Every structure is written in C-alpha cells, then in structure tokens.
Length: 344
Image 1 (tube, one colour):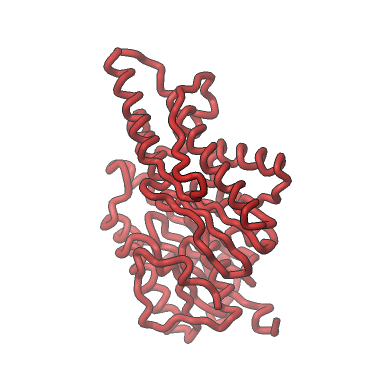
Image 2 (image 1 turned 90 degrees about the vertical axis):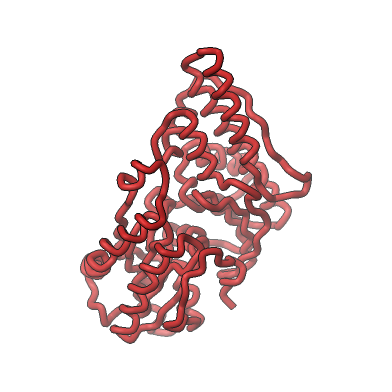
C-alpha cells in the first residue's frame, strides 16, 4: 500500500431512502464523523416513506450536513481523497439529491468520485468493527432486501438467495400495522415478541429443498388471518402471541438458511448486515446458533446497521484502492445489481 492509500480520507454521502447521512472515513475502517438526519417523524404521519417527501427533506439537509461532517472530522476539504455516494439501489429522487451534491463537491474540490452500491455498504459496515475473512457469507436483512451473498474475496459478490416477495423489514412493518403499531413497526414487533409468554403458531416458508431464497408474503397473510379471526371472536390480548409467532418463524428460516449456506460454501465467517440486523431476536438467535456450529459471526453495532454514510465510505474504499472511479455522468440506479458492482 502506498503513502496515498495509507492516508485515504473518503467523504461519503447516503440518501437512498429516508435518512440523510454524511460521513468521513479514514482508510475504510476509521470513522471520523458520521452524521444522520432521520425522517421517521415526518413519514410516521403517512404510515410509511413517501418518496417525494423524502427527496425534499434530503434537499433541506444535505448542504449543512456536508459542512458539519467535514468540520467534525477535523480535516480541511482539500485533504479529502475522494467523494463517495450511494448510486443505488434506492428511491430515484432521493438518490439523485445525494448524487448531485457529491458530484458538485467532487468537481469543486477536483477529487475522484466513487459511485457505491447500497448493499455493499451494509456488508462492509462490518469492516468498521473488525476484519473480514474470506470466503465470507453476508446475510443482508433490511427494509427492502433479504439476501445471502457469498464473498470469495474482498469486493467480490455472488448472490446465492434473495426474497421472492416481501423483504424482512417490509413484512415486519406490515405485521406491525395489522397489530396497530405506528411506522416504523419493526422495533415494536421485536419488543413485543421478546416479552411475550405466549406464541401463536405460524407457517414456515422453506421453498425448494436446496433453495436459499426467501418468501414472507404467506407468513404475512397468515398473521392477517389470525388477527381477523381474533377480532371476529371479540378476543383481546392476542397481539403478543402473534408477534412472537411471526418473529420466531422469520428467524428460524433466516438463521437455518444462512447456516446451511455457510457450510455448503465453505465460508469461514458470517456477516449480519442491514437495518433488521438491529432486531434483538435475530441477533440473539443467530449468535446462539453460530456458537453451537462454531461459525465466526460479526454483527455491527446498531449505529452501523441502519442506513448511514460511514458504511458507504467503507465500501467505497475498495474502489479507491483499485483506482476505479466514476465519471460526472454518474446516474441514480434504482435497481442496481450488487454483482455488477464487484471490484475487479
């Protein structure tokens, strides 16, 4: 590694959904600043993220957050090595706000621009807390993604399985709405499930015997049916048992498929990534199972599980080391392929 790479300061921007975030990351592992402006209170009134509203909030926040992130990092703008930004996947309007801000800054400072994949960011959030050993398997669980990704070497991504319908986070939010919880509903369901002494049986969608794909739409429908049956009978206090039954179903399938994939691929480490990685039930179950199977497991702290720019800086460092930069014609890619982003 040359001297320039030893002192690499990447300013990263993340605006793929409803968090505006700017960070400065040194050498892909050391977070010098990581600012996050959440829009939860704004979108709570609508029961979910409204894309146009999210974009407008990003516009309001991005400029001042760029300034504050650099100030908190304690370095002069000209000392930055590159500007990284999420180019996809995500909401097109939201992505464009971050991309235009990053382009403008890269042009003004005459710094390289690095378009970065959002899921690669979630995966390499693990690099902010420790080493990643290859081959590694990443279990990505978030609001819009549920995937198993094999990494045979640094920056290499091979998709083994994905959700065929709802992602885990989507399923949690829909179940939470059925149980009467406000947006975002995932934490409410997790808390209720962890505290419940009762458990209402729910189905498991294993799909084909050798499949690593996931499906949660049937489970969501089963929850809705159970809620309607309780209400038709005039019963009360059923919410906790349903929440626990739903969560146990999700966790059993996700954990079992992840462990099976680790063994089948010869992975030496399992990485938990994404916003749902903050779920206490999942963290606990996966930790216990990996201890039993003697599988090294890495889980980022909560602040790096949800959308944040530090994870984008960590992933962008892979491209920086290779000198693989983006042009100013960079566009937002709402359905960007992770495998296509592989570092050559």
